[in-house]
Length: 183
Image 1: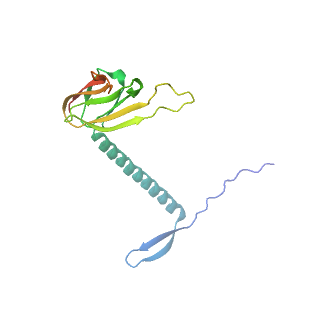
Image 2 (image 1 turned 90 degrees about the vertical axis):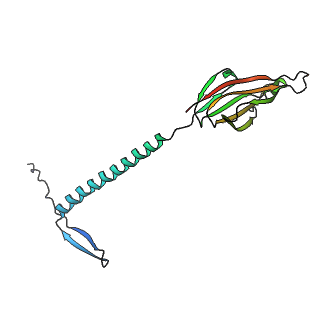
Image 3 (image 1 turned 135 degrees about the horizontal axis):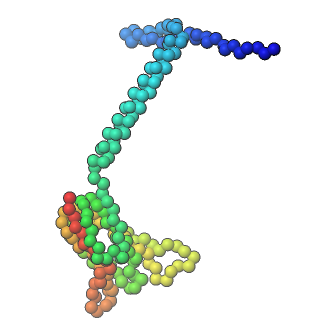
């Protein structure tokens, strides 16, 4: 014969709460009704949980609004294939001109043409050729110039190359772009 299933009785668990008297720094324990205290603690825990999440959500919204309010500077990457391009820029934008080192043909950079009231040069770097078991003949790496937009207006930006020992010593445009800067 099978025995019927009998659910176990719920036991009331006595709960001790810690009350502190901030005036004299004395702590006392009080015994209370276990089930009611557990329910109120659970309810208070949920309220605290949602209050913390609400504060966190408000912080995220405020930080997102602050990040969106600052204009981000844009970065333009140009190579010798961008010759003749017209760039619409804003103050703070950065232009990086990256081209092969012209030394492979016996040339050197002789002029950098730009209006210093519109553009400022940040840096010039020479990147060596990538190491390989079979190096390319005449690979002298790359030259990288960085410019920053510092003012409003228009400016040509050109890198000119030439040979030092030529009689005419004419400079040739390797790359020339026109920049238009407005707010």
